Length: 245
Length: 248
Ligand SMILES: Nc1ncnc2c1ncn2[C@@H]1O[C@H](COP(=O)(O)OP(=O)(O)OP(=O)(O)O)[C@@H](O)[C@H]1O
Ligand SMILES: [Mg+2]
Image (cartoon, rainbow over all chains, first blue to last red):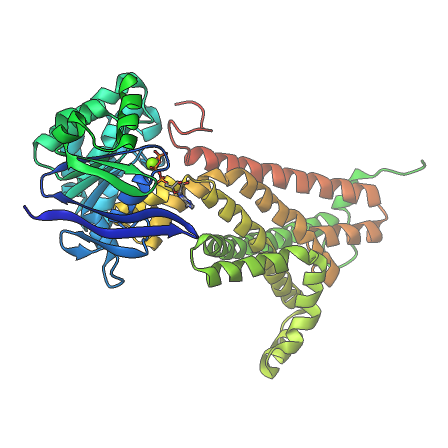
């Protein structure tokens, strides 16, 4: 298996505060990796380092063989190949759903309007929202917005997808509609790195689970192993807390 | 009070050429609009550039814009006008000095001074509005834009500015109105805009109250129209479903 995303000894500081310490892991092509851990443990920071939304000071990250930390790397190009979905959707509220789906295809990838429209609508249909193409983000529910956000990322034909707590801002009844879309993606072989506390999703869909604590990757193992008997005490505590809900 | 009101005064001859007093007001209004509109265009363009600069990660650029704002906001407008009119021309190259002080009509050189002065002064205020608008947007918006592969200019062009400008329409409306009100400083360097024409009418005709009443009405109607115009603009760019927009 070739690693699509490879992190080697990544460390990051905010001033004197070390957020990430020596993080090493990889996501193989077609693999689904779930990242979990207590609040403030550095999950978002780690995932944002992968597409260079956050700089890091030590170590290397390779995405499809391209070094993220290399000053010579064309970051916009690298980012355009990696889809990202955020906790708060981050659709552009001043643009219609169609424009949200097409703007980066046209401005970044240089696709024609027709091509971008076709592609955007295809993915919008896929997440079940074709009827809403002319609406604006503010007119959709949270779950619908998040599905549009996923479609928007997919329309760029990404080689991998990053998710940062995509369901944690949603009302419970909307969580599943988003998880269903993500599950479908995983089954199609998309390479995915998902920060999430949805352990049901992790059990069903993930290949591997990474557990982070205070900036360290403390567990990194196959899902069966993780849910069977996580080795560390912190991971056990975390799991028992989260599974109580 | 033994004042003799005479509203017919505006149609009386000024004694200069064939002009009636109303002509003076019309000329004055023309200058006021000409000063304010050109100053506003300068302020809008320069202020937007400065406002963007203030929010950039580059410390030098944001520092320069910050310095500009500090300078132009903390010196009284009138002092700035006198500097632009009396002092700055002396620092121009010889040929430009001759052109500015001798070749130009006095009204033209006064006009240039006041437009530059008011444009640069208002740019500092526009800058702060633009900066506030950009900073009011959630950090996630620029993150999402960068994550899709946008470059920094594209992030501003397609994501940040269209939202920021919508947010700041109400405060920008007051800045727009302020340019019109502030344009009256031009009367102090001899530009015959509305206030200057009003004073002149009051002195020539001795109908002081009528003159200032008319000026008040003109300023009021002018500002109300501008507010209506900006209200229309705000409506035009309103986004369905966005906070702060009603209806639809
Ligand atoms: N810009 C910043 N400056 C300084 N410290 C920061 C900054 N961003 C995050 N941190 C700190 O870094 C640590 C890790 O933050 P991060 O957002 O990655 O955590 P997280 O695991 O995603 O938490 P959550 O589950 O709450 O989203 C936290 O202690 C946070 O306070
Ligand atoms: Mg987080």
